[in-house]
Length: 199
Image 1 (cartoon, rainbow, N blue to C red):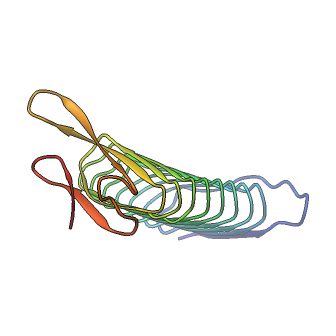
Image 2: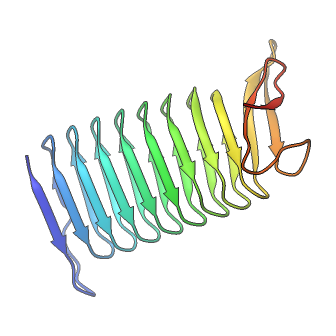
């Protein structure tokens, strides 16, 4: 097991932090840090602007505080938490939990059974996985999904396009907050007729 920590001074340029061990633990305070981990059960914590974090392995726990972070995770059962504007998160593992607080964030999800919560305004969420739950409660958030979404919650001014198959071809069901009885803060799902209903 490795424990790697670093505190950067202003203007300092440091080499990336990297580990290929299981149960690695990273902690870093500084801007523009780069952290990479290939191993099970990594724990990564970063405080600073423009962090770049990459993790491959199951059961990773990642926490990032700072604007313009970039987080990429490939591994089942990961936990990702981000606080900061303009963050980009990409995840390809199953049963992942993603929580994001910050405006203008971008999240891409490709793992089934994911639970995703995004609380920032102007956020964009793209999903291609099945059986996921999405909360996009920030103002004017946009959700697009080609996979099966089990439930979705929108915020004020939010909208969502969820794909479904009508028996002949793929189509999108559209939910726009304030139209067709779609209300902010209410959980919806698509019924058998591909209409949004409360759940």
